[in-house]
Length: 154
Ligand SMILES: [Zn+2]
Image (tube, rainbow, N blue to C red; front, side):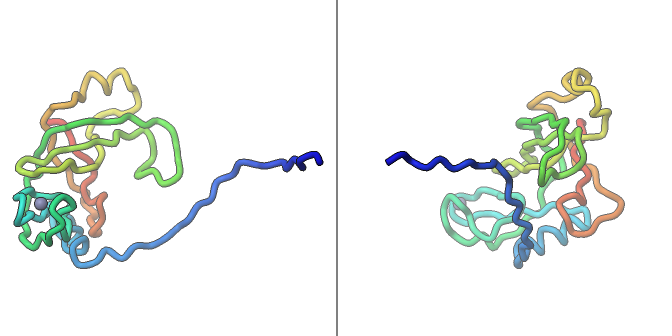
């Protein structure tokens, strides 16, 4: 008996959802509204985690000590994006970046900016992994990750 052949079509399913911040993220995002970046400190390994987390994912202990962290850090890695995709953080072009804020122990995911992003060759001359960066705040803060507009080179 010959196997029946089915025709297929490739498609995409989008699943919008809404997450409750919970106590820890609520406090973290309220901090952003007030131009403050909060982390939490693990009582076992001593690492400072940012964004603030309710527990240390390495030690599995609660992190109940809050610390205000520096708004200056080091650009660890970056990725230039110049095309649109579903769920993107902002209109392209943008530079997704891993930033290690001074005194913290994990990388903070945000954007680089404060200069012309339209010419990639020029962008490559401006930003380098390892450079010092600082947070630039939005004037219209709502308790959202984009209350920090971006990080700019120092
Ligand atoms: Zn820990």
